[in-house]
Length: 322
Image (cartoon, rainbow, N blue to C red; front, side, top):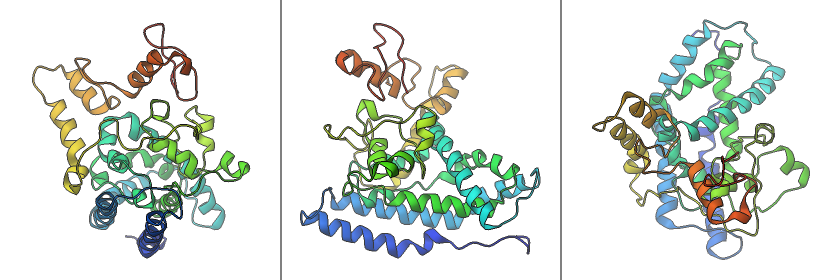
């Protein structure tokens, strides 16, 4: 590392005691019926183990992603330096980029092979926030961050504001907080908004990708408000059905590679198994989120056009999803 490189605190590592204490407190209050929410012991312990493994993988292999960004740094157009205004600018710019990276993680299966881990819990509480992937540094996901490096944000500063972004998202993983003041809900990501993101109800699939600011979802058509009259089903369309951390960490990556290299498939089909949205199949035997939404509207015509759902089913016309 150059001697003049900026240095920043490892805030996520420093936050580990805070995570442990707040999970324990929420778990205790939920168990005693003092606040809303659900905990299942094996699920919560698995989430915390996944979080520890993520921290270890970042410390052990983060140099891969950092090396990519430092390589990109030599091609920067300008050097914005490090000052409070630049840090604030970097925080907003990284959050905007995070929105698109998060959206890509749901719409491109290869990136989903890592992000799926975070959605694999069927419960929604603070421990769920800790359920993070171990294979991020092997997916090439970091390449999506290079535009900000080219525009003059130092890789280490980008990592710092990225950590702030993730730290902010920790508290939105809860059922304890229902709704916050309207002005805050209008601009910021909140537990209500993020509960929707983790829902597998058809209308909630592929929505609310925000990190800190929910305004990106509202600007780009992916915002769906929480329907407080409908119970949210958390997890995956097809749940993993295991607490084995190794399987949770790598099962989807294994499945994607197995699909891509299966027999009697065209080159196009093999590539789509890796880079098309999750649910793609060459023989139409699986359902994408768009298929699930269309099928839901076909079975429930009165729901057509509701937030997150197409205006009509595919049987009656083209589906228009968010």
